[in-house]
Amino acid sequence: MAVESYTHAVDLDPDGEVWVYTKLAGAEGNMGMYDEALEHIILFLSNPEVTGDPRIKANRLKTNFTFAKAAVLNPVDFNPVNMGDAINSEFPEYFPSLSVDGSGICYDEKNSRSSSRYRPSKSQCRPGRFLYLLF
Image (cartoon, rainbow, N blue to C red; front, side, top):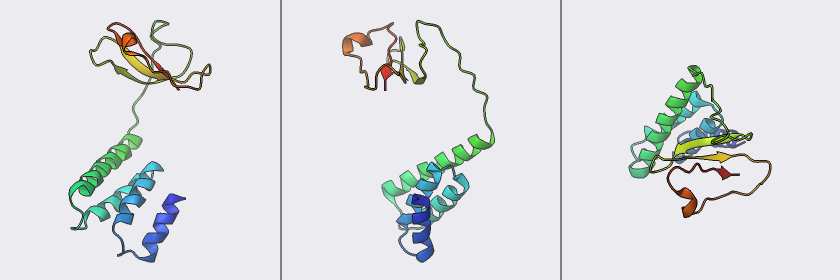
């Protein structure tokens, strides 16, 4: 719906408000329409009045869209491995990352037992401890 609305705004006045192009590009990127998103973010960046933080953010979007387009065209095999009961559970687990000190793994777990989010206390974040967050 957003893509159609922003496209309609551009069709009504292509030389009008330049900021609509960044909104349109963002909506297209969210829909996986990376060619269109790149076209519109480049149009936005071509305006010399776009400076400072908006230009920085738009360039970041352009980089992200370029990466996403290439990633879709060149998929990489992904074969996750269950690391056993000490780390993995029977529930889907997401976003693994090392703890700041590198001694533990933190991750999100989709758990049918609970719909709340579990946040470990500082005492639970000690070295060597494996943590997870429920959502």
